[in-house]
Length: 257
Image (tube, rainbow, N blue to C red; front, side, top):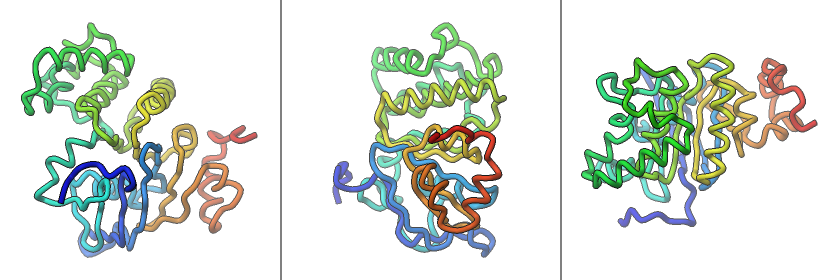
C-alpha cells in the first residue's frame, strides 16, 4: 500500500481503540477523527488518557484493540519510521540532549537522514526566526537556556523536517505563568502561519480555549464531548462537562462575551 498522503482522509483516525496498562484500561473503545489542518486539543483531569492517546498517535505505544490510522493508512511496524518522519513531536520537558547545542539538537534528525549541510543551516535559521529564538543562542547548550527557550528549541526540532502534523504533550506545563502566556501567543501565531494539523495535550482549559479549533474533553479513558469551547459551555453533554468548566472558570472569563 502506498504511503502517499491521501488528502481526503483525516490526519488521524482511531477506530475502536482500547489500551490497557497492568490490565487496567487507559482508553476504552475510542473512536476519533482528527481533521487535517485543524488544531485539536485533548484535555481532561489527570489520568483521563490524553497522554496515552497522543502516544498512540505518534506510534510510541500500540493499541491492544482497534486501529490507529495516519492519513488513511494504519500505523505499522513496517512503515512506522517513514510515517513518523511526517510527525513532529514535543514532550513536556522538551527532551533535549544536554551534550548538544541548540543548533545540534534541532538538526539531529536531519543529519541522521543526511540532509545537505547548507540546507540544514538555512532551515535552522528559518525556524529560529519563526519561533522567536535568538540566533546567537543556537550555539548554547540546554542548561544555558531558559525554560521557554528550551521549549522553542524542542519546537524547532519537531518542525525541522516540515512534518504534516505536530503533536505536543503538555509542552508548556512546566513553565511559569508569564513565560507560558508568551509562548501560548507565539504558538497560536505559528499554528496559524503554518496551517498544519496540530494535536496538543493540556490540563489547562484556558489554554485549550485559546489555541483549539476543537476541544476533546476526556474522562476515565473515554471521550465525554468534543467541540468548540462555546459548544462545551452552552451545550454540555453531561454534568461533568459543566463541572470541569466551572473548575476553570477564572481563565475563561470573558470568552465568547
